[in-house]
Length: 85
Image (tube, rainbow, N blue to C red; front, side, top):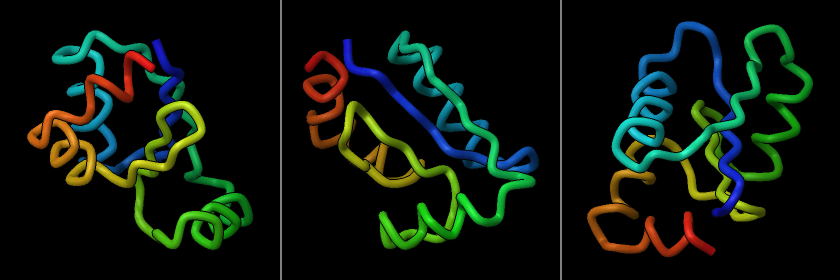
């Protein structure tokens, strides 16, 4: 099972939804990193990923995007393959 790492903030509804979806629907453990008080790291990730909003979800070393991107991957049938890689 691939490692799932999610960068989030404390009051982000999409972060909670992504974490809940991964845990309850996909039965995956999520390593959550809170960026609420780490503006410098958040800017570094924005430069690295091209995305400024959270959640920023990585499966293994691959950046998959945010909550909507995660759900799109699942609807396309690609999420399970990434998780099981």
